Length: 72
Image 1 (cartoon, rainbow, N blue to C red):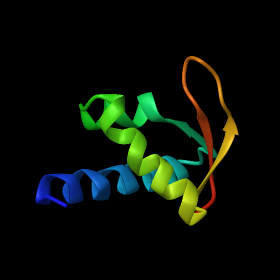
Image 2 (cartoon, helix red, strand yellow):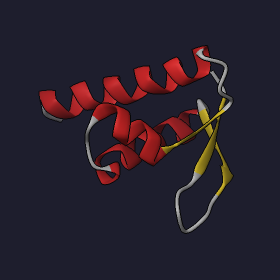
Image 3 (cartoon, one colour):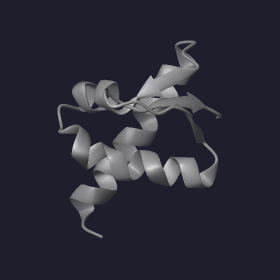
Image 4 (spheres, rainbow, N blue to C red):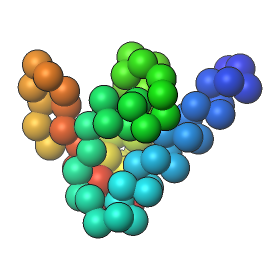
């Protein structure tokens, strides 16, 4: 894993935590990607990792974007 990937993973996790800290119980990949100024395709794998870890739960899956419920 490159340093850039590790940095992006950390940024995704921090962004999700910031959403949670602001009182948001749900988040979408495009919102995180926009805040980090990267394509959503680069954020998606890290969101999937967070689902497997239990920090996020797929709340609604749609063609536009998956909505994740935050469990931090």
